[in-house]
Length: 334
Image (cartoon, rainbow, N blue to C red; front, side, top):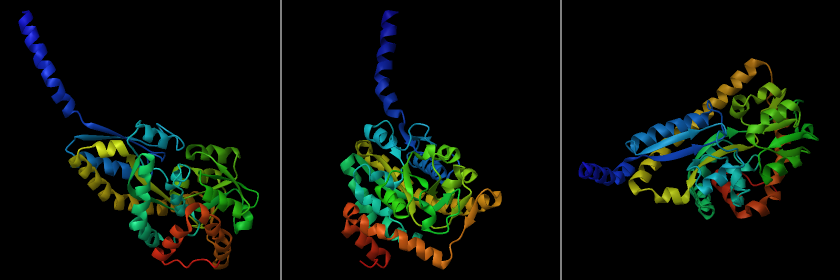
């Protein structure tokens, strides 16, 4: 009897490596956006493709809405290997020490999505993603959110109307300088804390895309918004460098295919959601939306574009000029 038990035990042990090899690779994909947001829908799309293209050898676990980490914590968690994928705002890379990414935060840097894609889909975008390796990260793609508008509980017809207002921002020296340029008082806080801060009056206003303003219900606690479209908000899909490069080449190729095919879908989701969000918020009647006149828009541009020169020493004059050249943007007079 003992010999039979021994035979079964040896057979069980011999199968253990095979069982371990058969277990799927788990990729925890964490982000701070709401479950119904376009980023969540894009992550779901990626999950479906990734699991299909790897024949189930990879399982993607999605954690939206800061379930695991707030935006101040998630990059450290990725560097430590606690999660394997993120899609943070590119603004997060400036505080991490890669200041060149703050070029995306410069107000009125991109006239439209077509100008933006000349950077994100071109050499400059690839070069910037490559710089993440020095921080133990690997950049995989850019996913758009959209162009930001300003909101507050008082009307914002021009930059002077921001004077003295406490404005919630994400951590970015460029966005901080932008608010100072209008006389606003920038208040850095986590995305997940913005609604409560606006609701309680800790801050007076903020900047965000219509989609974020809607999914986070900020329109319920902001009486006015102005369609400044002054700044871009976008994400970079990233992974832990050691984890990603440690995957077998076939797995990595399948995941890269899934990301490449998801990116245009993600960007289409974002544009549609911003359009839909504006319709819903206007219909609610809670926020009055103002479309600037030509003269008003010129005043916003005049107040904010000097931030480009102010931040050139931090971001890099050469990079800013290269973006001007690629997008066809006329450099401001110096």
